[in-house]
Length: 361
Length: 91
Ligand code: SF4
Ligand code: SF4
Image (cartoon, rainbow over all chains, first blue to last red; front, side, top):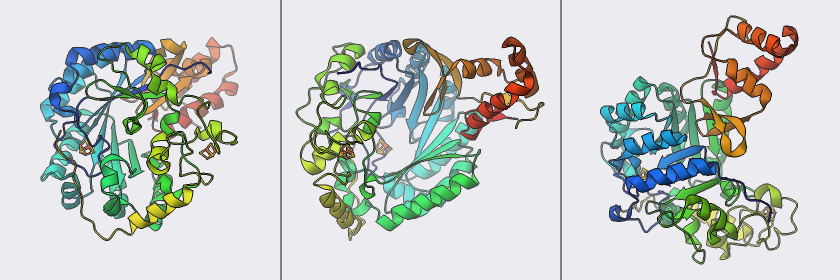
């Protein structure tokens, strides 16, 4: 194996607790209880170890990170360690006073999630009455204080038509960036696939809207768009390569190469509760399992694209083909490519729009 | 091109950082890390949110003993590329 580079980015899932209950939440179906969460001291140690290891960017996520009472101390500690600190939040649980404290603690950037572009849709999708109004208030405070802001919006069949409005809102809120991603199907979203999968036409229309807005808003708003990979021909590089750029830490300290990695049951994950982050990154079986290309089977093994996409997503290969070392079924060379396309088609025809909400942690 | 009197700004949320693990300088920005080569680092070290573009170019020219006319387009290109990505601002 070639030498393993140090990680660049770390996503810390501070907690699974969240006042919202989005039906596409990327948290696992089995949520961690508060009593198992890492303590303030443990997180601060992990932040210092991360910075020493080479991590530059830290994403504080959840659940809703604002449900951690020690959020301000965590941000302060992360900045002292030298990390670029980004808060990924729904806004619920942030007050003006708390935002001022986060400002003083050195928080670098806020990423605010939108569930829908009007109160009716947003509160229905997020399963939280009054959430939209609160979020708009928080957005106002963020603008007042001057935090750089990115809006973040998961698009699916029930809110895709509001994409132009999302882009307008980003401009109104003074956001520098908006990230729009078509819903990915694992965890809670998989339970809701019949109600969430967009049609191919919708996905294509979204691409056109984005292309037009990018041109029109050049220099004002950067639009990052993650298209629906179910409708593509080749997979995306997942996590920029397994165990090569980023890592995730769950609320109780398990270190994952990607947030869905625990769906691969035979992998052995290590925790920062009893090991150093560096040991986990370089030596844990889960991180080494799919590094490089040695683990590949056909068609990837002899494919000319293998260094480009690294065989795509391991979790998707497992979910559709039953084997995490298979080619990502998004790939036209995968024997299950047809099956995946057909599944996508069937889901988007789902008759019902009824949602199954995630449960509280 | 950038007017000589315009002022390049490193906005809030963007900072120059010494990446010790990789022995280089980087620009940290929302969701982005931009590795800087020596030239990029030299340019950004002169951007102090006060100096005008013309002053920055002449300081770089004397520091690296290069003609102003030769380096002006390179410095402008570098700044404009980052500004289009909303990583720098020019006011
Ligand atoms: S996706 Fe929704 S429910 Fe899940 S953590 Fe984010 S805001 Fe909470
Ligand atoms: S066969 Fe494997 S390596 Fe080749 S394009 Fe498909 S997923 Fe990528």
